[in-house]
Length: 219
Image 1 (tube, rainbow, N blue to C red):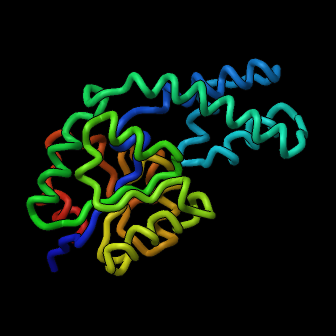
Image 2 (tube, rainbow, N blue to C red):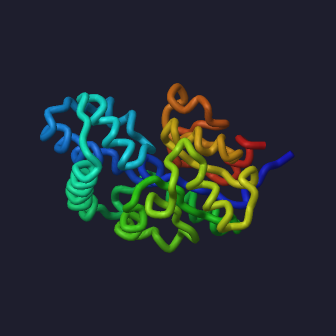
């Protein structure tokens, strides 16, 4: 039986646009100040992880225990550096094919929303010129629990009034795929099969990807 989604919920970083390089620069600067090694492999581990979770990962790696006020100051400093970098972003940094795919969804009457742990999601969508395509944006400012908890996607589905199983989540992170599955959503991984094998379907990117292909994959 053919499956047509009623809504699609997209993660932001690594799915719509690549901000991982900016996160890496921000966290690397902070880790260097603390005398903690921080590599691109570490950055991969933090895909889909909240700001608090990312800092805790770095502190644990360095064996550091800090008070809460210090943690808050460190996170604020990292975010300020990150924002300086992302403010240079434009539509040129959108992944190939993703806007065409979103526009096809909208043209077919499929609702489109964002589900991201980022607290800067709305800013990034605006800078890239695609904010008007998302009827709902659920981000780190509006959730209590980080992925793999499904809260961010459940709030999006609730906004649309659809059951999770009628919605498709697009994610590039293991924690994000787990969040989708924990919430009973249909899950599409964007990236490498060997990393995102828990997803129902894994695509390398959106170039040439269509609603028809999505329906075929999930039917």
